[in-house]
Length: 500
Ligand code: NAP
Image (cartoon, rainbow, N blue to C red; front, side):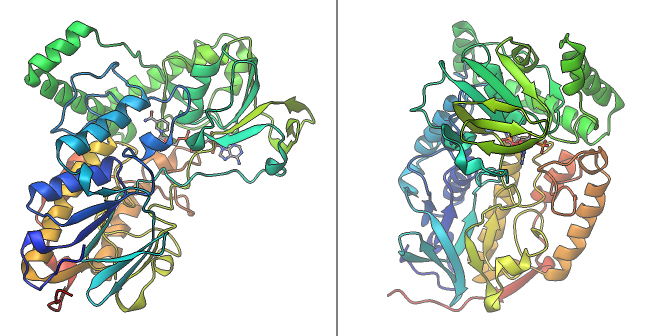
């Protein structure tokens, strides 16, 4: 990272820093390498590859997207154990991709980036250790599910037993003999409930808002199927395309509403699934009062079966506070617990923060994003030259698999970086172009079910507007595959720099 970036330089001379060695960061490195960039580093705060799949290790963790689609399109795995595979398999898959495509050696682990400052036509990057480095390009691939959200519940810290967020699971705590409380009923909590019900002394689930839960079987692949996938890569390619078509049809049709049949299928699925709850009182407690798809649909083959387990209790009274012995609700009851699991999700509006960024002329990200996160085409920010985000604000994450989104974004980012390299310039999106495009995104987002469906969710910003791409996948593909229009960017020549 001490190489030179003269203006008009070749790809190989560009110094590039990627923040995060999860799905997006590994992909970014692979595609930069393929495009001829050689001087890149991935700065990773943790000790291994995997991002959210490294941090989340809770019991029952698995992916609720089909595995052959929840993959890089160019790196298919014949050995997925299930249609929806467990988290450790996904983490191992990402690790393997980093090795197979020769980018693992470019990862610096235990290197948390805390600050980035655009000065002298380059980014000065500061790590938590105090070390600094200079890079021509800065890319964040930090995901949007990495800053744990802790509920503001009185007395939370007073709990006397073991207490942890699902993303920081404490595996030293034995569970079988314990009374366990789970706060939250999102995708994470439902996977946990499905795994733990019937296996612990007692499971108490504190639900603030019911979720719509879709039923999906999760069959294991047989050894014969895996051998057939390995022997014939075209089978894997077909699996990817079939699963992609299925998911995109469902997302565009049922969630964005373009296809009444897909919508009817989704509605029937979640209502039929709920009908498996036999006790009318429990069923009423579990019935949402908002449209399916407003919040992210929970997909679980076992949640309703698990919540009906005699050792499982669903508590819907508001939590008044946490005490050393357990959780007390408004109704006055104390639910005595040995372990309290915080399954309250993530600060999804944080994106790469708490990393601080200061761009051209001292513009700071906390000022630019004071009202809400702002991004141009989901990837760049005004006044932040040669700065790019994978899975930035308004990415399609409520409708399309994160791998597909990232592949499209990364291809576009590589085009922009190539222009910056070839022309010896720094690129930042124009403020007016960004405002105009964001106005179209936000207007459309206000009309999606994520805003009109009658719920509050992590998709929404502080004004209740979903920070998600509001158009069909095809439109996103067209936006990402189009050549960048430099009229939409502030293009600044960079001065030649000299090797120290
Ligand atoms: P989440 O969907 O944001 O759910 C958080 C839960 O905590 C909700 O039930 C929420 O209730 C509750 N909650 C939050 N603050 C609370 C408070 N102060 N008091 C009581 N309850 C509170 O978080 P998540 O389940 O971790 O899932 C986040 C996302 O991660 C998912 O939507 C998904 O994208 C991803 N994920 C994916 C998989 C996968 O298989 N691919 C698995 C797990 C997670 P309200 O509904 O009332 O806000």
